Image (tube, rainbow, N blue to C red; front, side, top):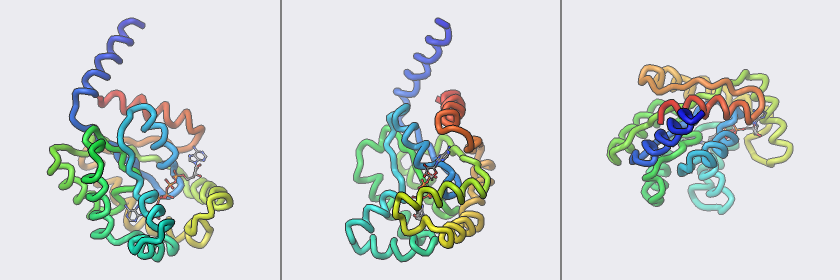
Length: 210
Ligand code: B4P
């Protein structure tokens, strides 16, 4: 028990000394990225960037960017890479706290975005440390998003748009799984079961990397 405590304290020490620890949380729409990001923030105190939240905030405020974003999101399509990358770079530059490390939630979603992220972090003397891949069956994804749609009022949480989002995920986003496996950064996490149990599995694996 004492040994375990010492090991944890040592790991926390190493973690605090590190300049930046960056986690990408990856998965299909409805896989639990936003949900598990909340747990990661509480446990590791990293800065959270949800590209979906950033875009929805622009839509809510009726900005020019929001109008463009809405036209893609409501059709279940991705925002073009160039635009998305420049939005992310602005968020990184505008927030000093990102220097302690970031949870990237919903970014990258294409190979081009992954390459851009690698470059952006390298310019800041950092890298992606781990990609947590939440793996969930498609039927469960659809059930979750339809359920959320009844409460959220999100323009993309209806069956027709959910199906389009899943096609976009398979064509444009899922190739990132192999990309990050080849970079030896991919950590597979079973994304079904209770939110707490999923997080406990995830945390146990992340702690080994700190
Ligand atoms: P996001 O906001 O990222 O939407 P999402 O993929 O649906 O994931 P989200 O985080 O909301 O849901 P979660 O899986 O946590 O993106 C929205 C849109 O913005 C995209 O479609 C795209 O158009 C655009 N966009 C965003 N990023 C972009 C990028 N990088 N490039 C281009 N375009 C981009 O959870 C879903 C539901 O499941 C919740 O209701 C939750 O309560 C439930 N849930 C979670 N875990 C559960 C569990 N264990 N059991 C039961 N239910 C669970």
